[in-house]
Image 1 (tube, rainbow, N blue to C red):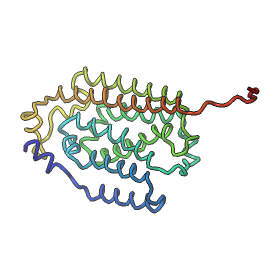
Image 2: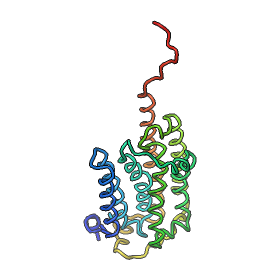
Image 3: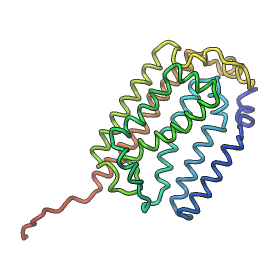
Image 4: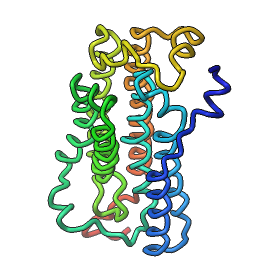
Amino acid sequence: MNTSQLLLTGWTWHPVILLIAVAASAFYLAAFGMSARFGYFVSALGVVLLALVSPIAALADGYLFSAHMLQHILLLLIAPALLLLGLPPSFSTPKLLQKIASPVVCWISGVGAMWLWHAPSLCNSAVSSRGVYAFQTLSLLALGSMFWLQLLAPRHEQRLNPLAAVIYLFTACVACSVLGIIFTFSPVTVCSIYQHPVERLGLLSLVRDRWGISAVQDQQIGGLLMWVPMCLVYAGAILGQLARFFGEPATPPLNPGRA
């Protein structure tokens, strides 16, 4: 198999995933109707499908740790943010979730998901077990939504103030950068299952021979993906919060004097 064949034939259209996507779209339209925000929701579903049925998923299935890392970025950072942007401003976060989802809990959810699922035993299990993989996928989407809830809750009054949001995002960027640096410069011990891929889809010769990606280089690329692109996402969100801060009208004095 060559690269062109992978891009054309490396799609795996799982009926269950497609059925869930269709059902989610139908539920959204029934609950909120067609609106401008529906585009964000469709984009979120598109990102999820890209992560789970595209050649990215085929490569992440025991061949490339870097593809596995790209999956995690899509499922933890991109899809949940788009999903929350797709909710109408009238949607209110359930009171129980409001009580649970404090800034500290939400921060730990988003950052902890990356650290937890890259413990060697869990990382290997997610690749070798379909059940663990399914649970990992759902947990990344849920924990990513928790993380972004503090910043992108449909109701503005349920969001962090801009300066607190900048600290929230900056510390998350630092925490993920540390993990990315560890992956980039450490021996291949994070997901050892990628050291000796089991040939199932005819991709091993493409990855190792045609692309020339060794196990060490693969982990380094994965670390760089966590280190650089993830922090670019956080940096973009920080700029958005700063724009929000400077764009908010100044609070008028309580007892303005006469001119």
